Length: 337
Image (cartoon, rainbow, N blue to C red; front, top):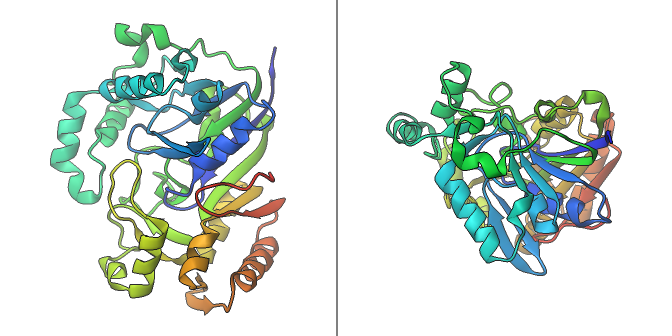
């Protein structure tokens, strides 16, 4: 049996855009996916999802495991053995079937030496200190260790066979991409949807690209585009508190700024996103702040409805691929896509 189609979900910003909730919502609907596949990064990212109003978190294992779907960690991912064991144990203890979890034999292993080097050399640049950058460096220097070369992973090895309907989940976000982001303040992997093809399918099979964004921008880590003085703005601090803007993996407070519509237009167009999901609408409604950035100017609105109308007009005018723009509250995702 061959592949029917591939859907991909990516973040359109700097990560933390509620991708996990979107992927979970897609995965649970009508049993329409045979695989959920992660295609980049390692345990430097995280998904928070809700199943029957219970919150679960993963950092590497794809969200399909929560919906009884085969969950693949792809060849361009990097795997920390200890973190993987902890996640498998966590899932087992919560009653999920971890036999569904498979790892590409071509994925690379994060070693303790990578973590030690990361802490020593990269932490000041905003690294999560998980050994990600040194591991990717060794991969491209052709001196890394692949999962297939470690007996520990033999029971989890994926046979590299895909069929039916595929859902691919990205980690981090568009503007953290090693090529597209504000280098060197970026992640060490390719976060754009075309990297999902590293799992072993042609671009022709991609059906939908779901792009996740919030109604405001957030950023963890060092980036001159998100200066420290943002944390001194009372309005933005109120959004941090209302939105509980703390990283799933690091626990660090995220810097918040108004939604940059120009950046969003670029990430939608370059990624080919055709379904845009804008979440955390209720956060701005609760603090009664309706602002965004467009053409380097703060635009302010009197209501969320006016703000939505403005966003729709701009995006539909500037982004030819869009089929639908969906607005969502927090933490639940709307069930209409």
